[in-house]
Amino acid sequence: MPFVHIVGGQSREAVLQDTWGHLAPVPRRPYPGFVLFGFSAFGQHLILDYDFEGLPENPWTHDEVAAFVDQHLDTQEHPDRYESGEMRIYRWEGTYRRLKNGTPQFSGKVRPQRITDFRSRTPARFRHPTPNVEAAA
Image 1 (cartoon, helix red, strand yellow):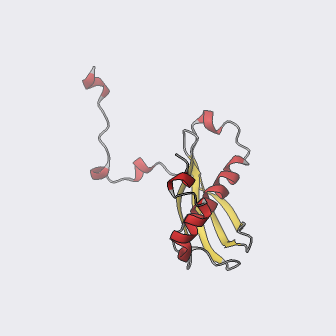
Image 2 (tube, helix red, strand yellow):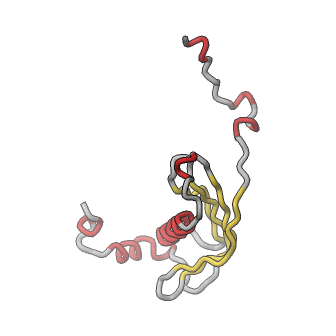
Image 3 (spheres, one colour):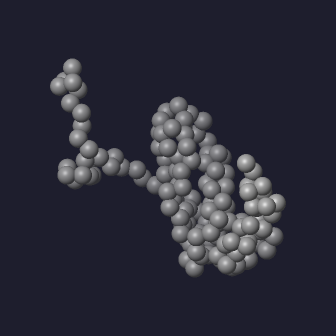
């Protein structure tokens, strides 16, 4: 059932404003912050974490960060990334602002992050046991 029918005919934007309007970004105000994102070995775009100074969680910022991540990852020149099963993690640092017309603006740099094999750095007491293939046979 479409969102509009659930809320009695109001537009999505009107419902968001009525419910979370007090959390919305102030137009043209810069919010310094970061976004940690990447894509999985299966090709999904992932938002791992993000935070902007002075800006509480709100649906507008979440939607705009997701669109920014999708745009960045879709423009990367890695045509075989899905077939190779390779994971990549990026970190964007800079300033986010929402313009007066509602358009988001992300100014900053995206840098690839080094990924280490987490299993080699996890203490033994926290590791999942490796199944013994010979015992199962």
